[in-house]
Length: 137
Image (cartoon, rainbow, N blue to C red):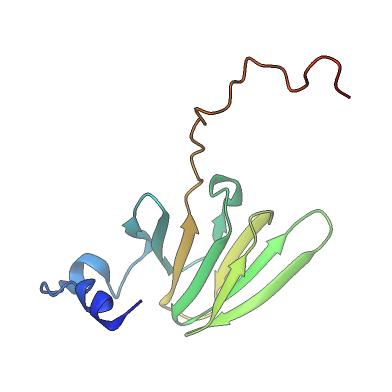
């Protein structure tokens, strides 16, 4: 992107931090919910179980305050990773149960996932026509 184009993208309106960020969030607070992705602020005080099936996408976590332990439990094994303030981790879409345990008081994470892509019907393809023409192999 050229500098002139980047400058055109800047929103110069007054920023109200109360709309986007709260220091003492307990639980989940939605920050952004648009057609392409969702961002939630997780204020963790106790173990948080993530239902990975509801996302149908990868999940990105960024630690903004404190420290947490992420554990993925599946049929083969349990794997765990520690995430500290300023660090991030990407959980794949095929992960099974995910548990996030805060290791410090006032641990906050940003949780980001993309929305499923809606497939549009292709007007060029006629689904009533068989895949193979008679005589072809």
